[in-house]
Amino acid sequence: MNHREAFGYVLREIRTAKRMSQDELAYQAGINRTYVSILELGQKSPTLDVIFKLANGLGLSPSDLLGKTESLMSYKKNAGHNSQRSP
Image 1 (cartoon, rainbow, N blue to C red):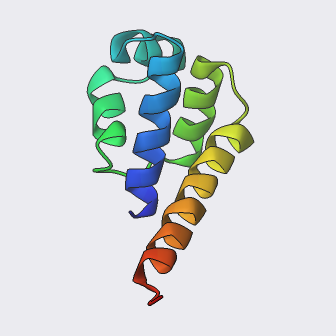
Image 2: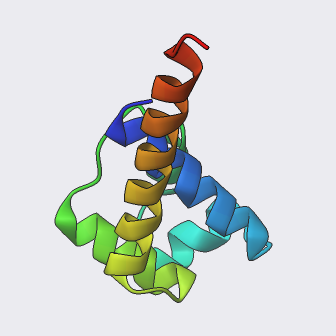
């Protein structure tokens, strides 16, 4: 999992946990709904401005959004290393 995919996964998980549609998040963040979809699919990396807008739209700090992404990437990296070890 790369950083774009991890960010997209976290974005979607937070958005759905808050019971927000992509349209609602896009409106709250002041960005295009299609762009939210592209980010959630991990097809593009958000700019710093967009990270701040998304965090605001989700009621989080940008550091919370990026911290959750970093945690997911660390977890996936460690899980991958653990599964490759021989007993």
